[in-house]
Structures are given as structure tokens and as C-alpha cells.
Image (cartoon, rainbow, N blue to C red; front, side, top):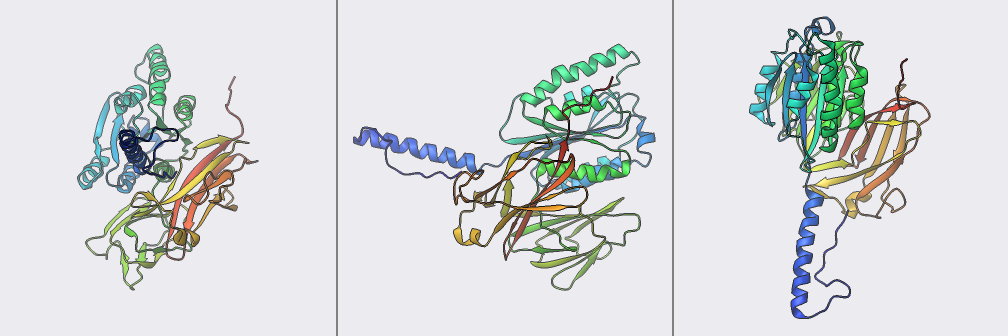
Length: 439
């Protein structure tokens, strides 16, 4: 949205000197407010709940929750708000809620090692209640997300009536509060014995995502997909294991998923250097863990970088940059036949880019990818024709047409020019019916 501010009066206003000054003052205040509303960016508030009940010994025997949480911690951008809780019978604030910075990450990495499977019960109600106690009303400063991982059902006592009462309070008291506070719940079921109906209700009512995980080895990718939904990081497209860093990029974070037979990861730089886990500059952070490598580089060299690793569609290069791409909030799940609009724009220093010379050389597109890796390319336009609203305002739009096949889809929204590339990825679940009814 573009605001045009002038010092003239409103139509029909009396144009004496006093009124002109008053009108001008109101217009200045209005423009300042409008400018704030356009430029103010919400901060991601991501809270994580990890089940440590005894049943996890069976469902996560190698405690893969720990490296998955470490990956999540390493990915969190500075200045994001986050906290981590573990729960069994009791709820423990494992990592204090606060602003993500170097100290917070060090503490969180250390605390992730303490994740266990010794809890006696599964007190989901108390975990959600404690982690979201301050989410009472909407707050436009924050984009609120709760990530809930469990392998069981509401279980607070041997008395089944008490368990049912706890479950009912979660659905009838806590869930409406989360809805009214504009919070999104993403739930992960690490067992087929999980209360799927409950988790679906928590996620569905808050427009979040529900994922059933059959094996703990899948946790890292699931956590990463939910991280992308919660934080929406800018990324650089990876093509044939190559990506290009431009002059606007100040930091890169490279995530490489590893299979059991994956060779050791290396990075080839534009200046000929080759980095590995064992050989890289001290300013580079290289975290190698079960299933992945996470590499953070400050002040990366501009030019083409090459990954020496297995090609994987979930590998990412996330960036910190003053030239970002922002995409309007996308749904996490839809029904067959549903349609929605996708809108994207470039932001430079927080302001929408409207420079005609730059935009004339930039192409906006959306890739729609299904489970069979079929790709459909759709161009986003800024021509004023529906679904675009205002011509040449720097906001590019396209309609996501209804689908004929249910399943999981990947959306990749990209902006490309000769000098830079930006991408934002989003996973979308398409359902063929609104509910599953078991009799």
C-alpha cells in the first residue's frame, strides 16, 4: 500500500489560515502513522513444547528430539522472541522466554542436551497454559506461534475422569483464548497412539499445521518446515547445489540435511577457498549433528558458492539482508476447491521498493510443487488487474487456483534479477474433506 501525503486541505474544508494549519497538522500525523503501519515489521514469537514422558523411550529411543531442538535454536534469527518448555507430569521452562541473541542460543544449546524420557504423565494442558500465559489479547507487534511435540494423550492422573476434564479445559478454555490472541498452534504427533483429534483441533482452530510423524528420524525436517512457517526467512535459491550471494547479503546460514551415506559436507567459495567442518575460519560457526550440518557465515563473499553434498530439496541458504522479500501470510491448510491470493514485494531498509528501473529487471514467480515433484510456474504481476490491487505500487500478486488432488504441496515464491535472487518457501496441506468421523 502506498500513501501520498500533501499539505493541501480536505475537500470542502474552510481555507482560512487557522484551519489550514490544523488540517496540515492532522495530515502530517496521519502520514506518520500510516508510514509506521507500513514499515513496522512484526517480530516472530516462537514457543516450543517438548514431551519428555516415559513413552518417548519407545517412540524416540535415540533421543533425536535433542538435535532437532538444537537445529531449531541454531536457525532462530537474532531478535526473535522464543522459549522452550519440557513437560511430563510437571512443566519445566527449559530455556527462558526472551529475545534470541548469542547468550540465549548458548543457553538453549546446552539445555537441549537435557531432554529426556523420564516423565510419568503427559500434562499437555498445563504445558500449553504455562507457555502461553501472557497471550491473552492480540498484539500487533508479534507473530505468535506455538510448536507442540507429543507422543501421547492428555494424561495427568490414573483417574480417567480427571484426564477428560483436563482435555475439556484445553479445548473449551485455553483454545478459545489462543484463537482470540491471534496465536497459531503447530502440533506434531510422534506416535499413532497420539490424540490426533485433539491436536487437529488445536492446529485447525488456530490455522496452524498438524503433522503425524511415524519415525523420530523425520523430526528434523518437520521442525524445519514449521520453523519456515513461523519465521518466514529470506533464502537464496539453490540450483544444482549452487547459490549466488549478492552484495546486499550480510549473513548466510546454510542448512544441509544428511543421510547415513552422505559424504562430509564442504563449501566452495567464489575466491577458491574450500571449507569443511574441520577446516574453516574461526568466524564461521559450523555445527555438525545427527542428520544435518548448520553453517553460519558473517560477511560472506559475493559470488557463486558451491555445496559439496547430496542434493536435497529441503537444503536451504537463509540470509540476513537489507533487500528482503515479504510475502503476505499464507494458509497452512486448505480444502480442495479453495483459492487464495499470493502477494509479494521487495523491501529495502524496511520500505517497499518502487524503483521502476530495478523492478523492470526483476521477475516475481511462484513454483507449485507436488509430492511427485511436478512443478508449475506461475508469474506474479503488478499490473492493477485482479488479484493485483494498484498498478506499479511494488506489490506483485497472483491467484492460487483450486487444486484437484489432495496432499502436501510446496510453494516457492521467488524474485529474480540479474544481480540478486530471493525466495520464500512454504508447505501447504490440501484436504479432500473437512473432517474424519470414526464410529
